[in-house]
Image (cartoon, rainbow over all chains, first blue to last red; front, side, top):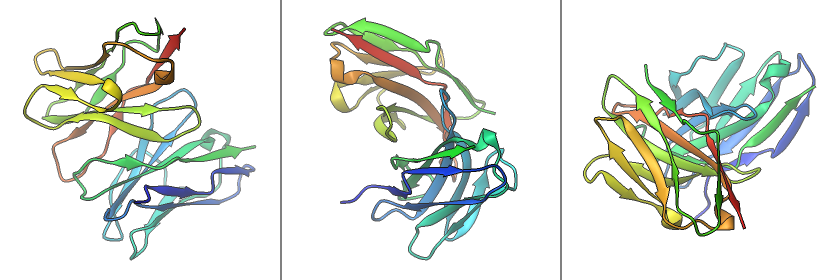
Length: 112
Length: 114
């Protein structure tokens, strides 16, 4: 049973560019959440998707947007990249919106 | 608003010694509590969780944690650590609500020395 998968593993972008990160949830999971983990910090909640809609959002600007597809996979888009967006981006899935979350390996984004 | 405090940023310990990683939380509503482990250059792995019932929760790899509502704590313990336990440990809470948004602490690096 495959767990949560994310792509790409690493990504290097320059300031002002746009980036798209992808996540496939664990089999049987329909809820996907995204987190940003800056170096030396705990993960920070970005938003959660369920039934292809954003259900809850953390304290992140509108430059951060997402999408969930009918097969429950999800994308995280970040526009107008800033140096401060450099972080590990983690995707988590759960079988219900209230249930335990299981994390993927993350995508390491470096903004130069 | 909820918050999580992990009082120690780093805990050095010798192999086969016991360890306790401390976690305190603040919330105006009832919460679920979690411990996750992060090995270098990897994502988060669930160690254990407290949802309800017995306040002593056993997890994977010989770890356990005790929920103390009066002290708003959820400390993680292991009676005998191994070199392979070296990792970053995160305590997290989520509200008992329709969503499972997690609020994390800043993490504790457990450094096991031979």
